[in-house]
Image 1 (tube, one colour):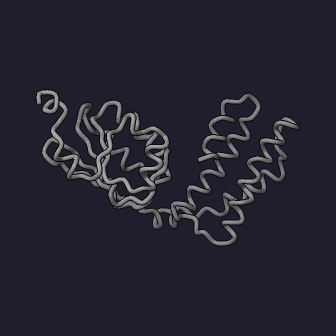
Image 2 (cartoon, rainbow, N blue to C red):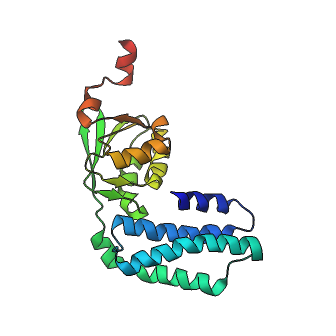
Amino acid sequence: RPLHTIKGVTGFMSGFEQGSKFTHKVEDYLKAMQAGSIPTTEEHLALAGRAVNMVFQVLEQIRDMGAPEAEETATVLRLLEDAKPSAQVAAAATCIFFSSENVGDVVVISSDCPRVHTQADRTLLLNLLAVLPDGTRVLLDFSKMLTCSSSTWEDVLPHAERLDLSVAGLCPACRGVFLSWGFDRVILEYPDRESYLATPPPAERIDA
């Protein structure tokens, strides 16, 4: 989360764009480790520590010298790139499974994927949302999910503005991210699918 903030802030600071790009690469590496596509071996953990420390060194070098030390930065970026699995291995290791079903007038989108962090992880979810007509009542049933990145919620937000979108079944880790980033201001949360389906639609609640 701090790296995500650093990436965003430096991206808007004149002269610090290289720091933002470097931080983005480090953040991607950590997300891949968290998602399990890069194993948490001693070597990979050591590289993670070195890369995080390098983020702050790069920012100091830009501040003091106007640019990061090219050779050292390139070395760390190469190590991060080399640690990534091949495309075939990554595809096999990534659990990407979302399904949708109609329950009355509600589209329920469920996930059997325990961790959703990378762009590949959330592509199917976004594709399912994209084809729904404006105003559709949608419930995201995330009861089987263990962790969900803030980037996933950020990608979902544009759909929340045009759909009647709610979420149910968030575990403590998912709920922590959901609340701490303020996504509950736009997306209604329910304890579980049953609680949502038992709640009358907005028009019926107003009439009552």
